[in-house]
Amino acid sequence: MILGTTLSFVIAASSLADEVASYLTFDNQPLGSEEKPLVVRTYLPSLDLDTVVLSNHGTGKKTPRYSAKTGLLSSSSEDQPIAGIPAGIAVNIGKKLSYVWDTTECRLLYAWNNGFLDMESYWGSPEQGSRKKNDYVPRLIGNLFYQAKGAHPLMINGKPVQNIQYKGHRRVDGLPVFTYLADGHPIETEIEAGDSAQTLRLIFRSPGPDPLKLDFQAANTAFEIASKDAGALKVLVRPNASGSFTGYKKEVITIDTANAEAGKKLYTSFGCSACHTTDGSRNHGPSFQGLSGAMRELLDGTKVKADADYLAESIKNPNAKHIKGFPAGMMPAYPLNDKQIESLVLYIQTLK
Image (cartoon, one colour):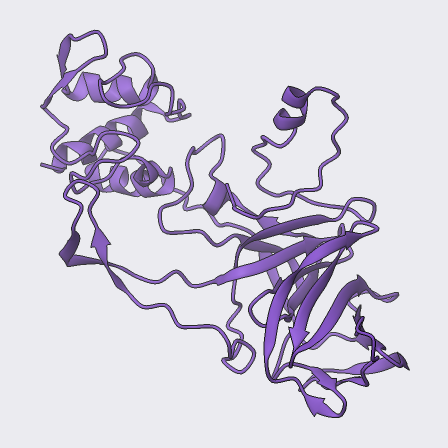
């Protein structure tokens, strides 16, 4: 689950159990509406935004891989940084508007319509189980029409904003109002869909006792000042970008004859790596390294050899035998055919 996530689902149930159940869903392509906007705080695609837009962000670096088995950092294996915005807030207002607000830069990063996010790489799916290892970034669905360009667009008392600090957001009629400090001044920003397709309105306010003179400038972007008053500014922003996104793309794996290489691809595609390592380190499930042919102790104390039949059974019916030291019921049954199961078994057998 995503820390800090706000999900606006309709909750009709009266009991706490029903209320909790309403949040538990395998809907990996959630949508809000104008009546019930959906707000999700999560990792988000960076869409190759330039470094000026992301001037307050750091740059990820590769790091030695941590081994849960030894408690040490590897001297030979490394994890690469994940490409994405780590502190964004994604908002969907139905098909009309989706956008990403960045809490580090305190600005709108990009906007699109006709869709929202595909969360499968992060949340997993009922068909393929757990999330994809080292892939926390959802994919966009829809048509991009706006991207931030250049420095922060807000100006205060005739000067461009330099220093920013995010304070939080609240809901007003379902829509988030973002609050932050800009050069020490409290600022509120709202984002709405414009009257025309692929346009949006930015509303800035300075709620302090002394209203500020607010203005707006945006590189390579068509906009017009809809209204400007003491301590308030409304800007209509027109399209300045284009792009079509179709969500998370699954690899189609066709198997004519069962083989270990296909099994390796299935291991990645079906998210097996989220629970089963290949280096001997412990996770939610047994490591695949050294598993084939090993003796396994069950919860009742009996032992069984992890031969090909045992491995195939464990994939088809994960709850047939419970291994001691691991939680029962964690692994779902996957809709795999015989060639896929045999390929996975062949791959596991290569991990000596």
